[in-house]
View 1 (cartoon, rainbow, N blue to C red):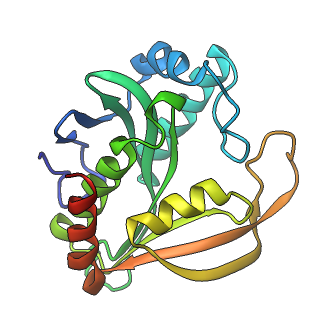
View 2 (view 1 turned 60 degrees about the vertical axis):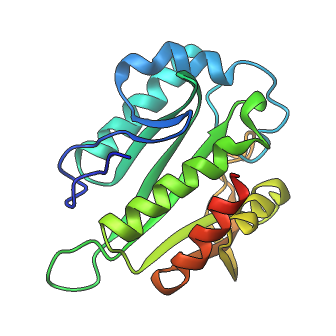
Length: 207
């Protein structure tokens, strides 16, 4: 597995395990990403997945702008070299004056229907968590979901993340048709001390 540089704002490398690769997002990924999200959309009820090629292009441009100022680290998810979704690090935080990364969120994840409920999400989360805890040495990784999104919440819980509670009216709703509204957010986390057991659980699930 390649690792991202210890200063996550200085270049992004691919992360790979088996037939799953998290490749750095680029502007040239528009067509492949649009192809991945243009099929059955019935599972995207609470997830902001682009609805046209133009929207895909705009979404990627926005993510790359955020990445250029150090706010996110964006990936396309590839299964057997085919793009099947996206994921990212965001909410990068430093607790102390040494400017070392202390905590990060994993989010912005969606997968095409054919990749859902397969090993792809588990592998992607293993790669992201392993990099965050073992290369960056963070103390905490956040994972959160719209509180109504039972599918997403069960997937987070299967990873071994701990439920911390519901943050009421925590952020703007990302659900289609709810522009201008707010959502309750279900917050989960994995702490550094919990990571070894979580890693064993993920590795076992992939066998």
